[in-house]
Length: 406
Ligand code: CTP
Image (cartoon, rainbow, N blue to C red; front, side, top):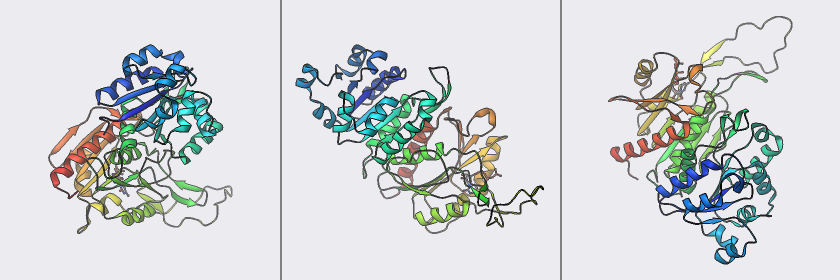
């Protein structure tokens, strides 16, 4: 997908700029041509010389530089690319883009481009959480701008939280996703259904039963399948994750709504159930808020929710060719997952350890054991985006083997 593509990489100011050098190297390895724009801030963190050395001299810094303009006008620069990537995207550059400002080469190129744009934000966690940045991000998403990251973790400023730029491998995966045109790629003409996130089961109009699922893994899988050209329907419970580019997103709250939305999405060739569906719902949710009344409420009466993975696996005619589930386990991970695959009747189970020590719920990493009818395959620990990309590759290979007519 990346080979022979022309990537315009804009590097704005932030300590994460050093990771962009690695990104250029990886893009070169994949056969892309990379041109770079360095903002004034970006040039404080990485030098034009190092960027030029890696990008074959294709580095531009100044809107008014005669050399740059005679060599390559900013309009040509923005149009003669297949994708514009901003990594790192600073809070300042996001604000300029959201407002449509064009007072330097980077912002002018971004305003002049007619190509897809992908941002990899990197900033202090308070800046990322600031209402102004949240507004800007929402506006940019409305404008069709794609996002990858940021992840959470230790930041260079010494604080901990969301704001860390996505790793180069994750940006590469997102670039593949953004470049995947409809009808191109190894999963072209394949329809995929992905479930993601938690479900919320109401107790009364203000309270519900939920779980800690962030939706990161499911959303990443939807993005990775789309990156290989699949037509993706993502059925998701409430999450803070951005919509994966190109996927049709159906938002639901309860397990019953999730099942109905999945059934409405059929027929599909592949179904990946990554949602953490609540096993139980309250039999009679109250219509009005339950008052405290000085005494604890009576015990909630619960009833079992439909099992979406089991339902899809047990379909006779019209069953997806490949049905894949997850097994969230805290102990005897592989043994339980092997059993779960049999119980549910799905083709593959991806087992993951969700003990609090592993930090899987809400975290950016995952360690998977893939279980199919032939056995157990441990995967190395990787980011959820990399796990998703690997799974999408495996699905593409399996579908090629099973001979779905594409
Ligand atoms: N799943 C589903 N519908 C449900 C419950 C689970 O589709 N009502 C799917 C999940 O999306 C996941 C797989 O089943 O792909 C296993 O989910 P998990 O929570 O690990 O297992 P449970 O079926 O809930 O079993 P247990 O709680 O006993 O581990």
